Length: 89
Image (cartoon, rainbow, N blue to C red):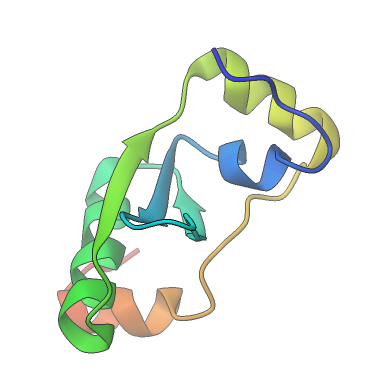
């Protein structure tokens, strides 16, 4: 388990995080379910040319992060990505 602090809580703010594959690692956002995280990753990869991966956060990490960040970090392109990838909520 990773150590979650006030400064790193954004990375663990929901069950799945979408991050760049290359260094330095940039976290684009966190999602509650894998289908949404995968859709966001595909969108960033296909439209922005960014190599990204989806990482599953541990339950303990997510619980600890909620102490510092009760609202998950979302990608600003989230709604656009879901519409383009056919994810409807």
